[in-house]
Length: 281
Ligand code: BV8
Image 1 (cartoon, protein in one colour):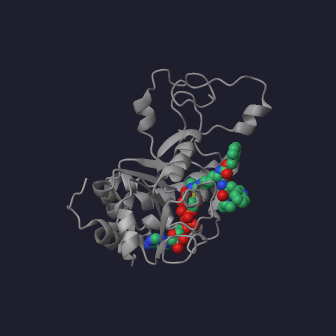
Image 2 (cartoon, helix red, strand yellow; image 1 turned 60 degrees about the horizontal axis):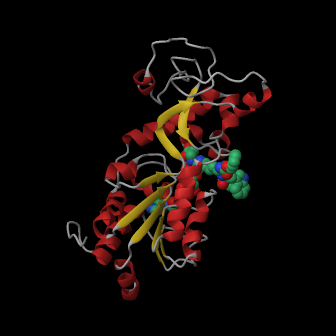
Image 3 (cartoon, helix red, strand yellow; image 1 turned 120 degrees about the vertical axis):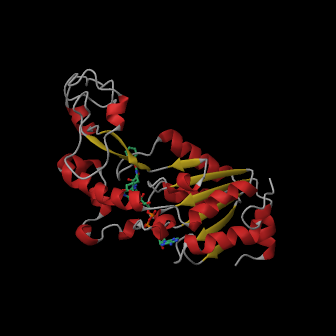
């Protein structure tokens, strides 16, 4: 498990970053990214379908792919790994969870300071076709309700935020903003889209100023998120990796816990900081 001197150093940590990927939610029944193309989607490369270009070309196809994922997310509950991550808040003065996941399970487990680098599948937003925007010379009309570029002004002048909030990511045709008719899409960061600048800046700052970073369930293949553990290492932070298989980070980390998040994290947290319920803050 973890060498005693490393345990001592971990117990002295004041700010811990927990950086997670799809493997964190695998034991909650949500397919990892590389396994996402399962069953009816077996022939689909997620990096090809989770893009604005794919959505513009075939909105219904991309919508249906996300509905398939959303159904798995709705069935999912936080696993023992999410609970162990949330328990760190009892022992460490500051815990920042930075997740690539879009399933809300860290928050559901009780983690309070969560940066969702790639968005959240249960939120919708207007689809803004940047290419279309820069082709046309007419300055687009911004919809007062969805903040998208209105397809037509005031389809329903009485539509309000509750009408927009009532629209869900579920099977059926791709919904439109009730006020302006703009297509709606999942509020996740697709490939080829920039991450939210403020969020990314916060994530970089946390990784560069923390005392320890625990990297859980990520293949570290997607940038710019994948650079976070390396930023922590470059600043001299302790880095622990949790993954059943080695990754490019494994040899550089101070320790690697080979196993599933739900399987190894509860024992890791108890053995270093103490069993559930023991408070040290
Ligand atoms: C951007 C939302 C710029 C959608 C996602 C060439 C080289 C380098 C970079 C690029 C390139 N070409 C393009 C890029 C950039 C691209 C990128 O990185 N592509 C990769 C594929 C090469 N990045 C982007 O496009 C980003 N944007 O760069 O914008 C820009 C700037 C200005 C203006 C315009 C543009 C946006 C990236 C975000 C993409 N969206 N998600 C959705 O989820 O539907 S990323 C997607 O991959 C998921 O969020 C997923 O979380 C993420 C990363 O994957 P992992 O989480 O690591 O999951 P994976 O399955 O890979 O691994 C799971 C791991 O868990 C494995 O290691 C496994 O062993 C382990 N595991 C399994 N079971 C368990 C476990 N671990 C613990 N416990 C278990 N039980």
